[in-house]
Image 1 (cartoon, rainbow, N blue to C red):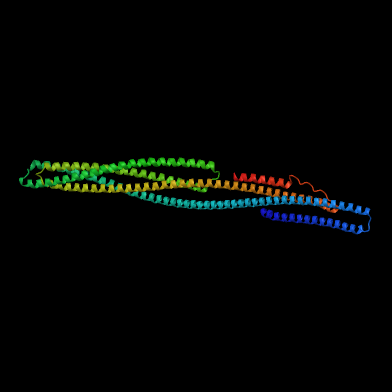
Image 2 (cartoon, rainbow, N blue to C red):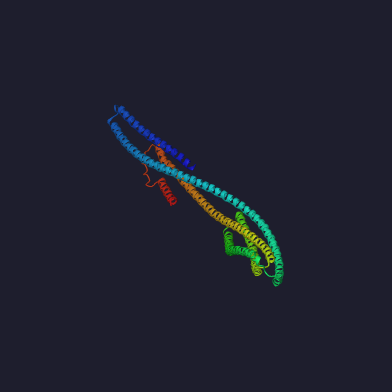
Length: 514
């Protein structure tokens, strides 16, 4: 608005100056016409009177005519001087007009540039605000997703805990059942020992009383061959079971070593996470006086995740203890199996020793069948234990996957914390830039107002100078006496003001460009 007012005032001032110059020229022409008319009238009167006047009067008239001619020449010289002065003034005015027009153009260009810069800054600020809003929305969405994931993880942890509890209960029931079966096996073993002792006594009595018949020898040999074949098959099964047990023990040792290693890694990770959280909390307390509710929620979620990790570790330790108990029971069952195999060998030796007694052999065969059935039961129990072991291994793998998911979630939460801190720093920097741009604009406005005031003062000085030049001319008209024109000043005030204004503009332009 101020630039528009300056542009409107300049042409009005130019028009006023042109009108004043035209009025001055018209007044000078009227004075010359009046002087010429007076001289012509005096000459005509002298001619008419010369006819009737004497020579003295003619001489006086001639002297008057010469005086009038001299006055005309003086007036012409004064008029020429006035014309020269007016031309000089017109040149100065034209120079001042050109300078003021150039200054006005420079001012308008600078104002347009400032307006363009302001628009550009406003657009940049609006873009930054939009980007900030979009980033805040994305962060809020990520927080909602993280909260939903945490809820899902909590629910999954609760479900897994319930499943673990049910599995532990089922394992405890299986352990009780196995203990009962082992007690039954011990009772049956005692019965077998009693029966073997009684059979030995009977066999000793029969060997002392009876002798072996030659007709029963081939049948006994066939039975012995069958018993040997069964013994070999049982030995092969025993070897395979032994190999499977050794492989299972190796796998269990590997699993225990892996569990210990993972437990140490988890403990170290928890310690590092706690140290990082403590350092982050200290830095956040130092940097920010006001706590962020989102950061507080994230920390609570991290603490919940750590508690879940500790619970999972404790459950894994309990499962390891249960596996050790199962391994112990497995070893006990293997020892009982070895003892039973030794008893089988003893029975086979007794059968070979007492080939003559067919009835005793049949009884021994029945007992061997019973022992085989018991061995099959033990092998089925071993298979069940192996299945339980595989199930526990699968559960451990599931728990490890859940722990990995929790680690990933903790890492994502840490990344979101870092993003929030970076966004806050960028937002503060943009605030500082915006405040600095505001200060610069205020300084530029202040400079522009000062320049406008200086320009108005220069215009007022020009008007005063014109009025001071017009006053002596009016006085000359009133007295009808020509006065010599004043010498023009070497340095006028408007020129000095224009020089000062140009210097200020140059300084301001240098500051803005730097």
